[in-house]
Image 1 (cartoon, rainbow, N blue to C red):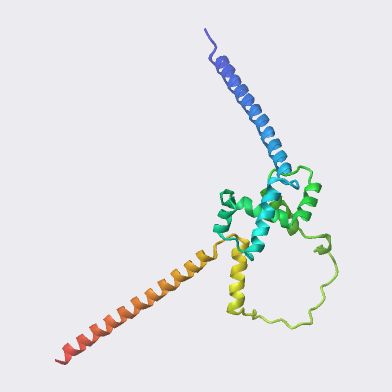
Image 2: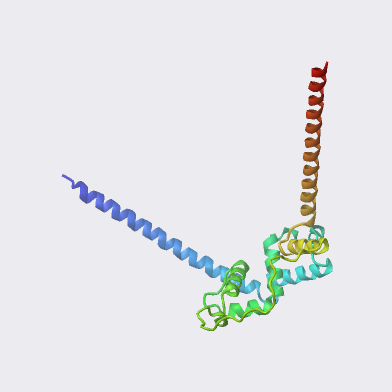
Length: 215
């Protein structure tokens, strides 16, 4: 008679061994993938690499268009088919090449993409320096400048400039923002008209009731 417990144990062991073999193969493939990504990253960020060429072209177009690069201009140069994020990252890399290359040189693990590099630099820049040690026993000096609770209000020109800067930094079409403002204004006007119409109807109805009582 076959021992059921022994058979089940053998089956479980075989399954585990199979899963372990699958996992080992996946791990091997992942190492090859990340190694390939690192190699491509190094190649693309060289002086004549893809990202350097793309970034330089983006910078040149930005200067030509005085900030915001129009979609039609991207199409004229044929790079409208390149992912928007990749264009933005390549432009950032060229504009911050010195800092980025120094950061890459100090990295122990290396990088597989500009996204990872950008994120790592952003995190590193947010870390407090040794000069900002909060454990210091020195008391902060009193600020002789009187403080006010009221924030300085911006003019409409300053607000407009900030909106343009934010659009350029986040690769957002200014036309889309303008259309949203127009839609909001249109909705507000429609709401006011509806409120006035309902108010007039109530007044008319009230006058009719009063007139009927008088008769």
